[in-house]
Length: 291
Image (cartoon, rainbow, N blue to C red):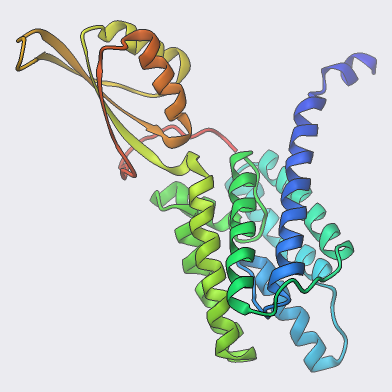
């Protein structure tokens, strides 16, 4: 029993739990301090939960707690995550959803501004940064993230762009039920949130790297040692000025891996020429870390 306890990676679980808590607090503050004040609806399942909670008040006179509705809506989506993404990812995400529901219940609503534009901007930035942060830790906020991650793996589209597409339906529903002004400010918040998510979650951004080097073997060995990336070699490249022989190496990395690649080039061949093309689209096999 003692040996089993010592072998459990408690530090890893603690890191995941702390990441979930940080996201949960940020999401709860975004909703309680900004979205509720501006009558703005969030993205994903949180937005659906907001609509259901408000409808319950109007239709039956009883307000269903947002935290409870959010938790219940995520339950069927956990099945999708379990079978289509990974059980470990689903467990970590479930922990995040539980913390988010808890903090939404205990953090009181605060009115910092009644201007819906200010609420949309600051709420969107805060929630987008939280979404990108939780995705970087190989977890998610639950809800539509299960769907968008599954689609991204097949199409290569970014998480933020897919979220904007899916959340358009939520905005239409909010506009029909509660007025189009509220829907338009909610669309602004979702757009900002999606763009901030893409800026923070750099693992999904692919970059093509072309390396012109006279030390090809050193560069290749270092890349294979530090990064799990394939490399295409073009032999017999010639410099136009000195007519010296070089090789051209072509690979694709994520923006998240770019600092590692820069360090590799400084150590293996600091005199090489490196050209980087941003936001390339990949057709074919490209290794992505398991979630």
